[in-house]
Length: 342
Length: 267
Image (tube, rainbow over all chains, first blue to last red; front, side, top):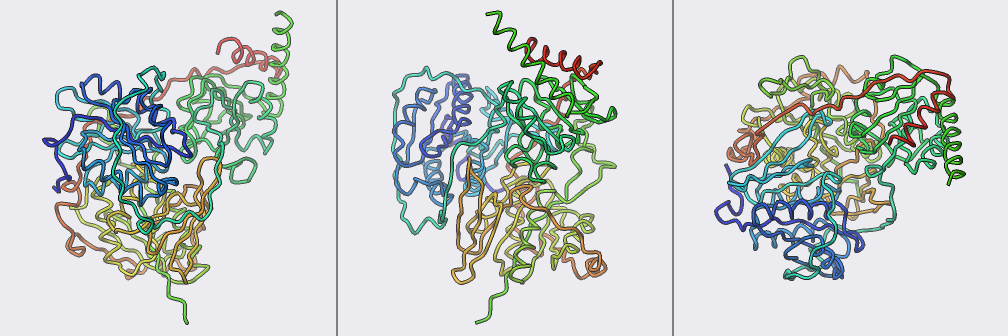
């Protein structure tokens, strides 16, 4: 077997977290990883170190300290303003080789996955991808990662014993962010930067970004399938009343009734709301995995034999176009009467 | 000046259908018996994108896969969709590969095919779902990458690949020099159907080239189980949440009242 660039006997007992930022805002998953990392670092009596790359990152450093980092390594440079795989992979690789941490965690975001995929090969180490659980073995310091495969149907535990760093990308939303109660100061180390423009092959021709709906964090979800017949306005009304979001199965998305970012399921978003109301959805496997983490599932479908009824807590055999308007009416009545009572 | 011929490769994996996979509760091994296979659905989107470029500019599309000879019939589907040739990396020594060993082996395949402009991959596989193969492959090949694209184009004069990538609340248009690796966002397009007229051609023996580890002159310490730093130490069927499956009865209004109290009172 080919060895990694450094081995367990050379490692520094530290957990490194890649703190991903976009336009000066830290990704939520990075804060989630700081919380989980802090807990594991305390258990092992290791150091928790955050790694930030960007341009003008000052505020982020302080924020990372308040979320539990012992030390921050920063690469701050105008050429790091936009994420490019060339520049980011180069600097992270150099920083890792200098410090030789035992564990290196990244969020399984689009850019986190890109970066991790390249770095693991460059470092000749293993990579546990899109993890849903993490644990450090107290005796050996081996990182055990839980991953799910086959559309979420199978869980596997994965570890590496002789390669370092132990790299993992972690699925957003798995761990909870801890309150920013830690000391906002700490040791900040600036990473030497040897970047020149010609090293960056990726050219950002155009970039438009802004707020995006994040269905994975919605507390209530109203999802529609073919049975909704494109009437997502109706579902929107229900979702608004309940401070929820609207989602869909793939067919309405393909037919252009609703944006792709609202697609639920294996090829879309996996949600974990308190309640998911599934309207006119038959219940195909690749959809169901998207609401499996919901606390309560309500299903409305005209077909009493629809598979969705196997995966729901409360089943309604009926037409969405009758039930949903009646439900909207019933909710309005109750809200009005409770207001009068006050 | 004649246009240089575009040669693109699509990496394709054949996977068990996820809904049919179970774990043996005693041995904790995957029960693969009787489970049907399919082309990894995200790879169909990658294939469609490569074929889109072929429709537009001509050239060739090669399929690259790693797996047992039983993958053959599935890969011929790709030929029937419009690809030109299949390269199947097949050797017992490739088995048990994790991301590091898989990307190394695929990279050696791309090198041996030679003269490749774009290497297409699906976003992730439905079985392993790591989504880390495209960038790992680009690293072994020491070439650039464009990932999670919803659209792609090529500028021959400047020798660049250009892609549209969806990001938070918007998109970015990126360019990198050719050759490059491209990963395609799942469901970015509607994969075409097989063309039954070319099916007999697709099933001719010479459409598929099988390469072993020796053919690739692969470093034995970097392939299969031997080249894989990670080990699976436990396996379990994911606990499925037990649902109440309670049917609500009554008129639409009565049902609406029951649902309203569930939503406003209990939850």
